[in-house]
Length: 302
Image (cartoon, rainbow, N blue to C red; front, side, top):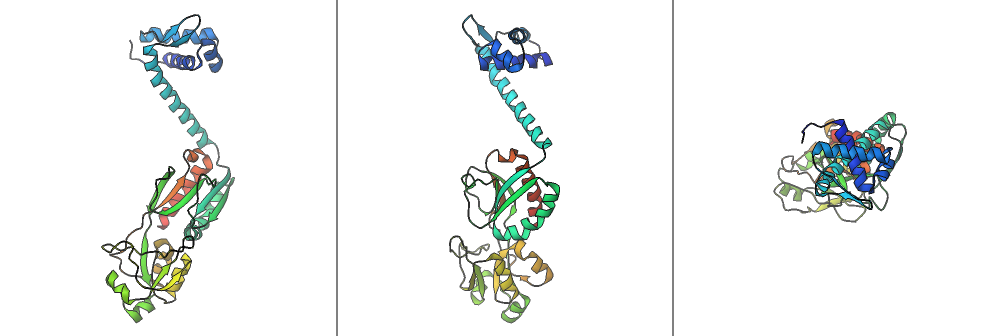
């Protein structure tokens, strides 16, 4: 048996696979746009080249031999991979278009996603983005979402996911507050400070702060509780107390000096920022375009 692969061999493998799947040379020929005779001869040439009989032939039936079954396993996989490659190339060539339904957490949506939408539309003008700004954990499949942006630890949901970066937090307060009350040096010092907490509107639970070396879920006595993420930064800037907020929410205020980080050696990330989508959904050009575009934009802001 020759080890040289040829176009003729490939043609014979395609005819062979079609014959096994359809049960006759005539049906295989119709599938491939050939005559029954041409399909049969292609398989015969392949058998001759390989030096084995691939099909049992009779007047009533046509089926693979033991050697044919071995070959069919490999050939069917190769043909499937080629079909996937062709589909992917078609998706690349096709311009993204159509409606894209997305769920995005409120603060990240306002601070990062919405400001970048004009650039996205300029690049992909035929994509209509339908964004739901909400902190609810939506059912991606049942509610018909193409994509969702999730923060924190991911559950095993069966969805496809792309990790964009860490869900980083900054513990901070205004310079005026720290000048008046002092700067905490360890998490334990927070018991002597005014701590502003966030309450999840969807559950009513108060968010816990995370510190290295501290018990998980520890809550210092809150002086204020707010149910709006962006209000945390406003309250801290106003001198109301110390907050632990997503870094992307307060980074501009920190850079401008309106807020000053504290306990930087102790603050921990809380999971990751991830894009999730239903299996195979990313094969749709508009979904893939959004994933690639916003993964880069969001990562740059974390």
